Amino acid sequence: MPEANMITQGGMNRESELDTLQDCVTAALARARKAGASQAEVSAHTSKGLAVTVRHGEVETLEHMQDRSVSVTVYSGQRKAHASSADLVPASIEACVDRALDIARFTQPDPHSGLADEELMAKEFPDLDIWHPTPLDANRAISRAKECEAAGLQDSRISNSEGASFEAGLGLGVYGNSHGFIGRSAGTRYSQSCVLIAGKGDGMQRDYSYDTGRDLACLEEPQQTGLEAARKTLRRLGAKQLKTGQMPVLFAAEVAKGIIGHLLGAVSGSALYRNASFLKDAAGTYIFPQWMHISERPRLLRGLGSSAFDNEGVATLESDLVDQGQLLRYVLSSYSARRLGLQTTANAGGVRNLLVHPNTKTGADLLQQLGTGLYVTEVMGQGVSTVTGDYSRGATGFFVKNGKIAFPVEEVTIASNLREMFLGIAACGSNLDTRGNIHCGDMLLEKMTVAGS
Image (cartoon, rainbow, N blue to C red):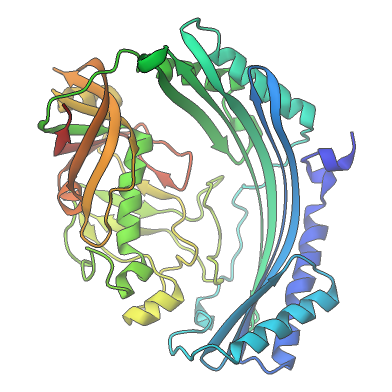
């Protein structure tokens, strides 16, 4: 099998490639220093991947990816500029640095720009178990996607397929800056998904399932993903509307993660210093019930967001974002922290493995606690304002009566305000969805407005 068709450590020597990237970074930093930059930071990356999509057993797309790039940021006093290149030969790297310095002459001074403080740079680089290269050719990837879709199509009530996909990729990166910091990283990621349709005409329903992780051996079997996609699609047949009213709402774990995502948007430094957040000046206040606990675990083994340092080289550490309902801090890079008169929280590039701690409720427990209300399994639309906290989105799911699912629901709108929603969280389930950077279970809210027929 030709090397170009393989995703494997044998097709790319990790340490040798990292050494090459590090040479590019150190050369660019030396060039910037020699050319008169007061500070500089450089990142170099290599990625390699394979992606396939099949539909009705036929290959629709097959893509091999292999990329290299270098990104240079220079500071000339308080002036900042950026340039990048996909060519890593020495002459191109020098030209990239020179181009960034030329741009810096025309940018406006910004007193908040500059590298993160030197004493905050990471000094320890533990193995986070995120590198699991697996020999994988196009035939194996196609076979896995076909098995996934075929399992989903076994039930005759499934009327169509939007396809199944499988992706595998690895990425290597080196970040360095003029503090003398050099950080190396290497990670793998695998994912599979299946999207199915059931029913006919106006009664058609669509749903999907997926899995993703660092190690291919830890992904569920492709047949399991296909069968779960079919189960989720079939349970939506016969969906009805609800009458408008107020009721408790239970968010499925994959949807509840979106609620936490809105929190992160509101406490991010860029939203705060632009006065575009309803949670401005909220640090130190109680925005959740007192049992609520949310922590960040950037060094979680095999975590999809795990890293020993952030995008500025700042050492990552486990820390609480919310404890006993109190917002303890914001999510800040060094730049946004300076704008706010604070210190970076090692979140340049975002949060890493945020955990919403459950209060020991399983899925069945939460349905019983919900009683009669709406169980939301999907939301759509963009009706969320970080500025005001107003929340209004289309939703589908199930009407629950006396703790049991009664019938599927479609074409409803759920509305409230995020501040009220946060305070109204009654429980978080232990069925954590860890397929991403936010780890969260089902989430029960005491009351929302549900608009239907």
